[in-house]
Image (cartoon, rainbow, N blue to C red; front, side, top):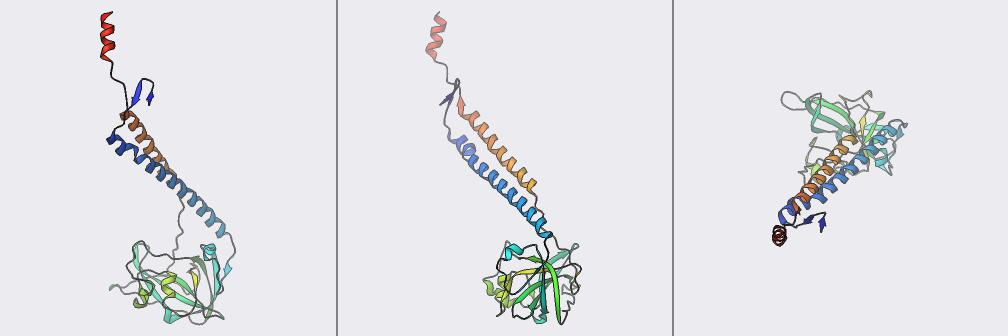
Length: 251
């Protein structure tokens, strides 16, 4: 194959160092474009759900994902003996605990986890008091589906049965394994102005599509640079024919 008076010469080193990574760079660029589209959709979802009226929760939640970030309400009574704390939570630069209290829904045995906010630890790292309101009440907040951290050290969903009142993190599956009644497939972040809670500074994910577009441009740029360098090292001018030089000199 040739271009003009240049011809392609296959070489192993440029191929391994430059040509083979090009599809990887392109794939990563396309993946970043896909992430950017996901972030745009997430931003639109957050904006739309923030405008919707609260959903009154019952013991049956068919599609919990459709309620994520939605304003919700539930009526019932807190189960004080089921309360536990999630360690290592931060608020205003300080480390403390999130207070998770199950709410037994009115007229049902089903439980709904309520994150009532953050409490600090004392000088010995022990949590401060977190009293539980008694009697029937209606709670209002935002629906969340907690997920496990990237590094999981426990062995199976039954691990939480040995954690007692202080957990390293919470998922609905872990909590469900500790009780014998139905558990709603979402958790509620108690409204900042609702009574019966503690320090609450809930944060939403910040969908930043522009960041992923920038990464995509970088990966596509790497692919273009690698292609140019590969062609630069693989396209060579053919050596002059000595016989033609002798012919020219004999004229």
